[in-house]
Image (cartoon, rainbow, N blue to C red; front, side):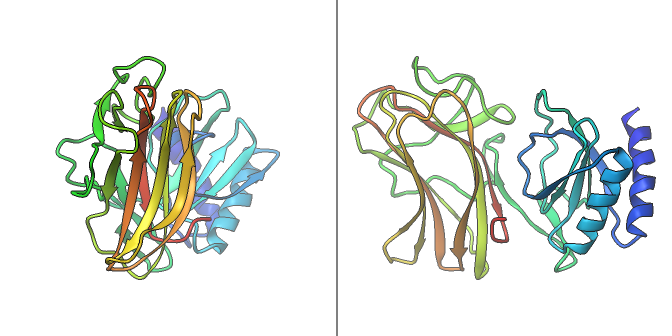
Length: 276
C-alpha cells in the first residue's frame, strides 16, 4: 500500500520538477522528525504543497529532500541525509522524497556526488563506524547502555533512537571527573554542523560540553550546558565547528557530586556544512 501511494506521489513530484532532480520516495516520517530543515511552508492542498516545496527545492542547491505533510497542510525542505526512523507523534505523518546514496552517505547537490555523513548511534559493538571513540585522556568513562540507568531519579529510561545510548554512571568516581569522547579522523578545512540528543536529569547534574582542539593548543568551548534539564531527551539542533586535519572534536561530560548526575547522549551526527 505504501509502495503504491509512493509511486503515485512520485509521478506528481517528477512532473513538478520537470525531471531536473530525481528524488525517490523513501519513507513515511513524522512531522516532528528532527531533520536538517531549510524551511517549512503552508499550503491548502496536497497538490499545492508539491508545487511549493518542489519548486523551492529545485531552486535551492542545499535541498536534497522534501517532506509532504498533507495531514498538516505543510511541506518541508530538507538538506543532507536524514534517518528514516518513524517517531510516534500526534502531529501527523509526512512522506519523504530524497536522493538516496549508500548507507552512511548523502547526496550533495553542490558537488553532485554522494559524500560521507558521520554518525554515532551507539547501536553496534564494537562501534566501528562511530567517529567519536573514547579518549585516552579521560579519567571517567562513557558507558554504552540499553534501557534505564541503574540509579533512580536520574538518567533516561531508554535510548532516543534505537536501543542503545551512551551515558556516565555517577554512582562511582569523584566530583569533577571527566568522560571524554574525541574524534578519530581528519577533517577537511571547513565548518561542520554537529547535532545530537542529550538527556540531563538528576539533582546533581554537572556539565556537558562540546569543544574543538587544534593540535596541542588550548581547547575552545563551542557549546556547554549545566544542571538538571528534566527527564526528557532534548535535541541540540546544531553547533558550528570549524575543523581541519589538525582539529579534533571533543564531547565531555563532567561528574556531579552524587549518584543523581547521570548524563546521556544519543544519535550524534556531523554534517559537512554549516548549520542552517
